[in-house]
Image (cartoon, rainbow, N blue to C red; front, top):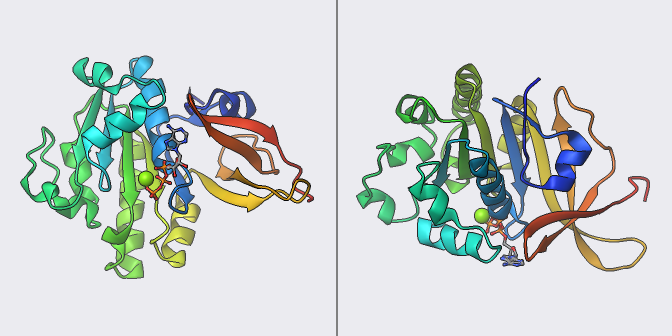
Length: 236
Ligand SMILES: Nc1ncnc2c1ncn2[C@@H]1O[C@H](COP(=O)(O)OP(=O)(O)OP(=O)(O)O)[C@@H](O)[C@H]1O
Ligand SMILES: [Mg+2]
């Protein structure tokens, strides 16, 4: 199976990269590094020549560029090369912005079908940051249908899709997304039972077709972005 870099080199060593052309979801409470993971994934793969569309519902492009810059990633340079395309759907600006892709606000309100038709045909990677309050008005069956359709269609097109799920999404929706996606990683903070200090850990909840560690992986948000520090024994 073709693999694609996760953006975190230690994670590539552990799982051998993400399965290409599939949907991977990242869940986690605010501040756990979902956006940073998304940007790191985008940046790393754009450097490899992969065409990436980054749909942001939370922050606008200048904020994301600034966040990247804080880790030494020159996102503007890869945008200029046409490899990275930010689609801003943040707040009121979403109403006014005419993007090259003409994705309407409806798309992130849960009508994912909009994405399917408007993505450039040569897109390799789609990142949705994030599915949050926009989907809270949907019924369970609406959410399931739309999520499934997105996963299915992106898989048909061979587009690796990275969906960041915010803390505001109902537990039921998260459970369904975990079930439906090809892979899922949860970002958390927890107290290390040995040191008593709080630390960041990630749980590779699932990754089909991939050998994954059972134990939680500790990570840090360093000056170069997310790095895996040491694996933690799951029996603690
Ligand atoms: N340059 C930096 N160096 C180190 N840590 C940073 C840096 N920039 C941000 N952080 C850390 O990353 C956290 C934010 O991560 P991020 O925005 O990716 O979280 P998120 O999961 O997307 O949150 P939200 O749900 O609010 O969107 C900050 O709270 C801070 O702890
Ligand atoms: Mg975020």
